[in-house]
Amino acid sequence: MNVLPPSTSSTTPPAGEACAAIAFYNALGYDPEESVGYLMRRVLAKVAHEVERQLESSDLTNAQWVPLFKLSIGKASTVAELARECHLDAGAMTRLLDRLEVKSLCRRVRSVADRRVVNIELTEAGRVAAARIPAVLSQVQNAHLAGFSTEEFVTLKSYLRRILGNAQNLEAQPSGSADAYEI
Image 1 (cartoon, helix red, strand yellow):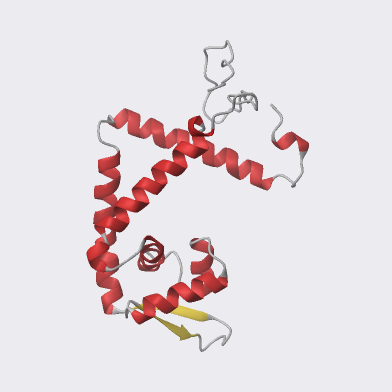
Image 2 (cartoon, rainbow, N blue to C red):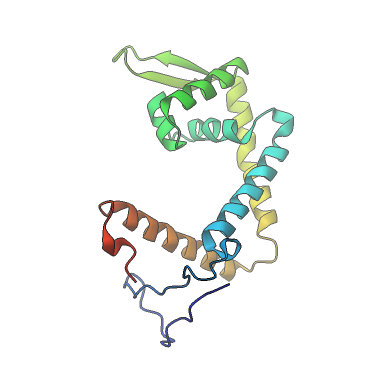
């Protein structure tokens, strides 16, 4: 792996204070399997696979349990909101809801206030299936965090939140902005 050495400063800036970006990677000798993005994607894929495996008896795929769970916790109530929450386009969400309706887990109900709006309701079977999801998520994530101390767990989450914050800042910059990646 071709990683540039970190800055010689051993002090960490106070919380909330920005620090200069360090070029941890460079194009010469770049090893994608050592990139943070690759490692996060692999972890996420492994977690998703295990959640799907644990939910196999419920006949829910990874693509299906996510919207079901988001509906159950009130993150969305319309097709448009659910599509945004699940990062899917409207067509993909429609096909997914078709499959969930065939399984009698939800139903689409046109709004009486605005006929353009389609609300989604969980059926009783959908509520039962969704109620099982938090236990599976907790079990699978705890298994993937085996060997971590409480302090390491808290630190890991703070690092991930920092990466997410950096990603959101980059996203907010105009496209093609040269200083988006300036180090």
